[in-house]
Image (tube, rainbow, N blue to C red; front, side, top):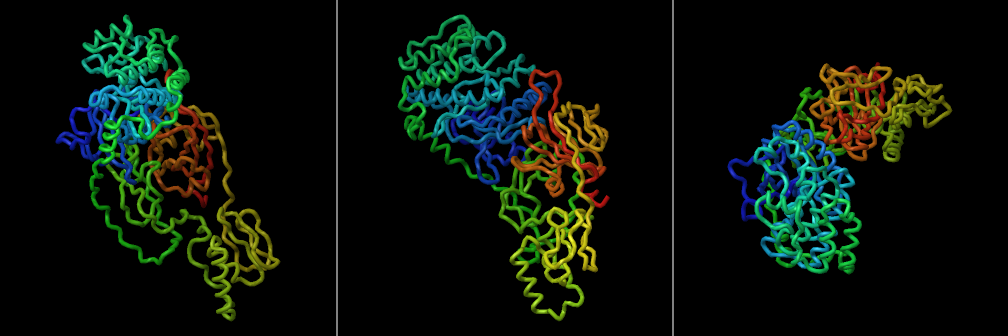
Length: 621
């Protein structure tokens, strides 16, 4: 799925926003309009880091159709797993917003349709490179379980390093809506396959037929089955043979085989690439910088000079901290629980996966909300602020390496300067040990125990004193002052391959955790039929961990990027979600799979690890 190039309805590459165009879409500030088509309008925007993106805003009429939204959400989830060299990746989307939208990387190049209209048919070498790149793109798209269904010249962009296939999967979502039977046409008749025109099931071979039509159009400048009314073109596609008299000889076998009426007779994508190699082995898979004609390359340069990002309003003023550089507060302000709003991410909470941990550094850039969170902004990609200390929760000792040095024990004054030098040297040499290390060095020869970063006890660093008890409460034999105490680490309970169906919930305090009916009754974790995971219990919250971030007890305790709900279309296999319940339990959800498209129910397969009474607010229980 993509969304960058629509059928343009103006002569300029970057059209100014009209009075009826929005200025922002879910936090993305719009810089220009790129085009419009049957599905909606396409706009140019930017990420906080300055990367250009294309925002496709779906027409409101489609957003009113519940079945369209359901299929669109499925296609978005699949499209976000497509990572091919010749596709424009989907980087953000919200199928459940008031008006659905999606964002893809912006490709600075004309569509094949625009290039042929402006400059005529392309050279054979260019067409071979084009077809080979499109075949690779379809291989990745089909691998994600998607059939494009609407492969046409306007959905193929010509970039400096090869083609980009966009808008894969959108036609499937549109097929479900009643609008397609009331004057709204999705798909272009000139580039449909016979089975598609006849209303029969489509497969990957359907895209191969369209690929042959696109190749013929690129090489000749006209559709293989001619032009005219849609019904006439579709009749010829089903019942007649294409006119390939103008197709160059080196492309004839490739195009003819792709346009076979029977899907079983069409070549595979691997065979298509071999046909391209046979026709021009010297350049098919070695793309020169000048693979496009000069006139088309000039259009790429024009599109590279995109309008500057619109100026964002100045960030809120944050009073500078009076603390010296390298400050390390030991008790940060406790985060407030976000409001429980089923269909939105609170504006005060950064959306999952966006922005750094909370910091007192002023924000200098704005990240768009990555979900249903309205126009709120979240700081991202700003300058690095003071080091962010680990979160200290009530009832837990301060993490080592942060905070002030403990007061000097009585009787140490006679060692004054020497003791201070020893303490400073120890802090410099063992910075990670922080205040706890300084305390041990300054003590008498009878060493006590020190609390490690994970809260477990370790033997004293000097003397013949005792060893830790393993509970964090042990003291040295000669020590008269007890060491810091901590409850034993909670035990983890693991539950695998849970199929959580939409409309059901999980209760983390149950001895046997299994989905139970209900999605809205102060539950610990529910899969709402609106398409999101929900933490409804009073004081409960969710945190979506970053891709590649390893979840665990300490990671979930330290995270404060709270949300009350996370849309399932933001998830992919392997992503993890921390769950904190209002009853004091902590859980880690690992996403494994999604229900197949033909399943009669919508569900999420997940693994769940639970640490009972281990949530930060329950650390002293």
